[in-house]
Length: 175
Length: 435
Image 1 (cartoon, each protein chain N blue to C red):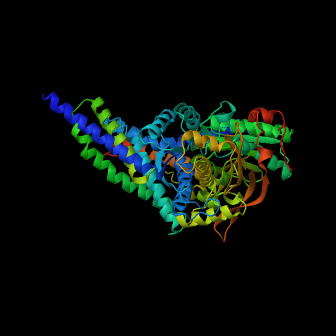
Image 2 (image 1 turned 45 degrees about the vertical axis):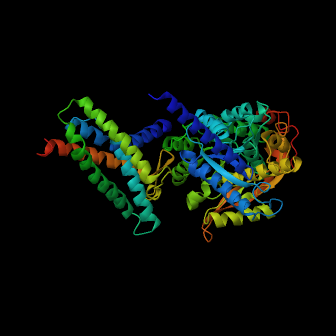
Image 3 (image 1 turned 45 degrees about the horizontal axis):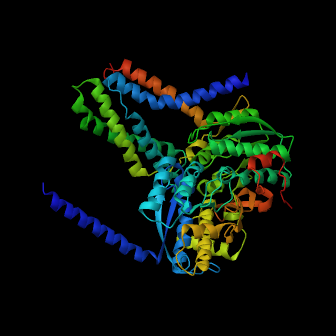
């Protein structure tokens, strides 16, 4: 019984962070009808930016530890807000009239470019942003120790999902 | 199409190139060209490749300046200045064989020192043998090189990975750590499988009550260990063993420590000294660490070790030298010893591959990690002593110190000649000389 529960919780945690990453892909596909091959690269750029921001924030001990979450989120958002419109206005817009397959090829090309750009900027060494992981304490469930962060992730995934659904179905812009 | 003109121009160009190459060889007698191969990009670069290169470069620069202590005080190799041809080991075994051929045949290196990946070592050794060129393997762990082959031109200047896990098992016994259930997490490839097999085998001989309760095999480079950590926590083993290395090990420790996996039990990380500096105080206290040799903090005071530590502090300030740095240094010193021995025998000329290979057989030399001897593989494979210790964060020095260090002699943790490591362990270490 404990084993089944542990598997369920682990599965939920993994599913939550996969959901948060993938929901953007589904949104773009559903709304713009573009299968964005470069989505993974955008995730990578966001992750590196957040990790660099965390390294700067915690390394320099700039402020209270909890604020680091907002610093990482803010940094990733800034980068997304910069790159997204750049890609859409600069590259994708030129291909809207064409076949969907052409757009897939274009996004694939963007993926290759972004991958090397990431290597150019951040190099080949691993980056760690481990401080936020331990900040939310421990939770003991079914005799196992989990970190609060993982459960916060599940909550975040649920909130994101609900907000997105509300935004798409209940607002004028969404519909 | 003026064929005659074209032919004359082509012949002239060839002659010019030929003359240039001939001119270059006249210079070659004052210079020893050494190919050095290590990971400069990819996952093993930060943990093993670049540190190995740092270790090699520190010693080479000092040798060229004549500033190494006796018996290594001759400039370069026997007066020949050392010129390094640095090659990136990334790209796979097939590419490395090609690079090796290029180094010998196109770039005319006099010898090659290097290789961290066991896969690359296994591929390039036969290639060098076929080319009849001297090759010294520097860092790779697989015992198979000389246990399954005989080579004339290939050597390894460091002990193979068999010693890692024999040492770990012996350390547990020496420290009186009783172990009943073991949980293991290893990368699912040759290194992980061989390591676990050797540790399980050694433990079966030394602590027969120990049982392997759970064996987990994440992919190399997985990076996410949430489910594995949950499984290990579930099974509550009294010992957790891992041969994870580099970024994978750092990620595992960072994810496991907050969840309490690494406390209240014995934790053995067989080849882990290289993560102590990156992890800093994130590495819990009391974790048992290995370094495949008396490297880094395990190295005992000796003139050459003290010299090396000081030299590294100057060339790479702030970096704590660990096993790859030490193996790089002992590789260069091994090459130097052989080259100078060959030069003494041939009247001071730059030696050939045959002469250098003959000189290195059964060689003994002193390095920062201690006294080394080519005692296995018909005098082609080095053996060295090993050590293990436990982590302890030192807040004043802001580094992880190793305490409760126990040393094991080379003859205790290396198999004797004529028996394969796996068999030696399975038979209960016949011929081992331990104190």
